[in-house]
Length: 146
Image 1 (cartoon, one colour):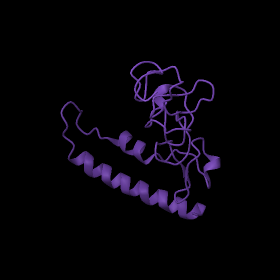
Image 2 (cartoon, rainbow, N blue to C red; image 1 turned 180 degrees about the vertical axis):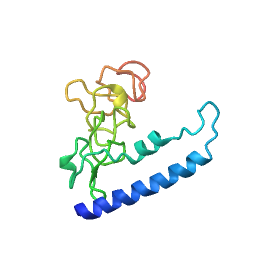
Image 3 (cartoon, rainbow, N blue to C red; image 1 turned 120 degrees about the vertical axis):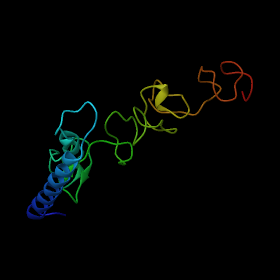
C-alpha cells in the first residue's frame, strides 16, 4: 500500500514525465488541420486520469475497483472481476460479452444462449419448453432435439 508521501512522489514524477513528453510532442506536431503549437495535452492527461478519487479498497470507489498501488479508483471495465458499469453479470452482459448460463441478465442479448428468463432474470440454456425457437428445434419448442 502506498503512503500519502509515496503517492505524492509518484504523481509528481508522473506529471514531470508528462510535461517532458508533451514538450517533445509539441516540438514535432505538424498534424494537418491542427493550429501550430496545439498538442494532445487534454488527451494525454485524460489517459493519466489523475482526477480519480483516492482509495485503499474497491469499497471506496463507485466502480468497486481500486488500484491500490496508485491509490486511485479505476473506471469500470469488462475485465476487472467486478459487476459494475452496465454489466448484468461479473464482466459480462450490457456492453461486455454475453453471459453464460445462470448469470444475471436484462435482455436476451446479455446471454450467450440468447435466452434471458423473464422471471428469474438469469441466462438459461435453450429448452423444449421456453416458448422460443432455439437449440436444435425446427419450430418453437418442437422438432429437432425436442
